[in-house]
Amino acid sequence: MCGIVGVISKAPVNQLIYDALLLLQHRGQDAAGIVTAGPDERGTKFFMHKARGMVRDVFRTRNMRGLLGTVGLGQVRYPTAGNAYSEEEAQPFYVNAPFGLVLVHNGNLTNAAALREELSAIDRRHLNTESDTEVLLNVLAHELEMAARDLPLTPSVIFRAVGAVHRRIKGSYAVVCLIAGQGLLAFRDPYGIRPLCLGESDLPDGKEIMVASESVALEGTGHRFLRDVAPGEAVFIDLEGRVHAQQCAANAQLYPCVFEFVYLARPDSVIDGISVYQARLNMGETLAQRLISTMPPSEIDVVIPIPESSRPSAMQLAQKIGKPYREGFVKNRYVGRTFIMPGQGMRKKSVRQKLNAMAAEFAGRNVLLVDDSIVRGTTSKEIVQMAREAGARKVYLASAAPPVRYPNVYGIDMPTKDELIAHNRSVEEIRQYIGADALIYQDVAAMKKAVGSLNPALAGFEASCFDGVYVTGDISAAQVAAMAAQRSLQLEGDDDARGRLALQSATEA
Image (cartoon, rainbow, N blue to C red; front, side, top):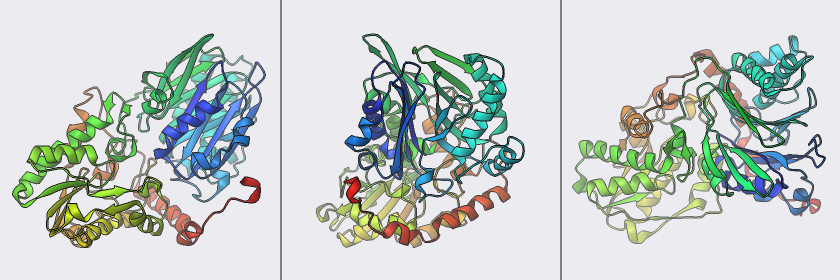
């Protein structure tokens, strides 16, 4: 779940990409990178800066001055494959042939291991990192080279290459790629698992075209939202700002990741025709129905959200059951999203840094806490304890999402069963672990109906972490086990690596 953006303009784009990445910071806080092209008229020279950290930490004034040109792309990273602690695996990635390609990617390739072997043994390409993004880039480079051999690089040639990429790679991927001297290429996997949208703005000498993970990045930078990139579709914007588009995948169907609507996306985004905010309101309504069938609402004195993704659901639930809605936790906005922090130790440590309970809203009351989801249970357990310490008589917990019982292999940090509190546990066992007096979960079918009703054109949802159904159809138990093993290796020494204070050197100040 990274955030990506690309832009073709007639004006310098460094500040524009920086601003867009700030708007996408919620999608990744581990690393950030920007590449621009120019300043020659053919846009053949790339300028890159990337590093670990948040956007405001990675890009200083001197870095921005070096990012010249009117074409560019950027990414904020949330590591789900490769090495979470390697600065070399921060995106964008670059290869010099053919043409010169720079690429950013949101998602996770499920056949990356097999592709690595193919790239080495057949395509004769060398990979230098464990990142699946580097795999994707080299597959695209090879297919572009094959498609463009002895031919000028036209949009039809590019689309033919993207079609070959679709046939070779599996998993989830939204991609933005700069082709030196040619333009900007964006495409999305045949199931549309990871989001990607297209927008434009008017400049005195022409159109400025932007692609981004979420519509909020377009609107927040003064662009008109045009449409979502369709699953399997490729969009090529040449250096003159002309947009070419073509469906490049056979049997493309729209199965967006439902966790985008549960937690990942900003509430003011619209993804695949669905307002994220309205989706969360709908989930709150169905959760209220579930709660009423489970326990009498009369036992609840007040409804309190666990900031921030749960607020719309909590508000709608409170209205539905006729109980007051109150803000009981104050959030420290200078602590990042705990879910996307690698490592249990880091997440647990950050909960009390992030939230503080207001005793006035808890003292002597039966409190219903509403969360967007319960993944590992660590945060929920800590928050329930905080509510009790603040004086709550009873603490009930409701999750706007169903139990997360299965690993996610498409770019969300849930790759191992052992990390999931709901895997092979009953709701009662989870309740006992968390320490709540009652635990109410959303129903899977109700969640899909609540969100899917906002766009009947959807084929369905990628909801594997809830229902165990992997829509790409290529996921075996052995693959899940291999990903779990890789994850375990990544997490070795996690607390030590993440617990140290990272200070800027004198040269970086």
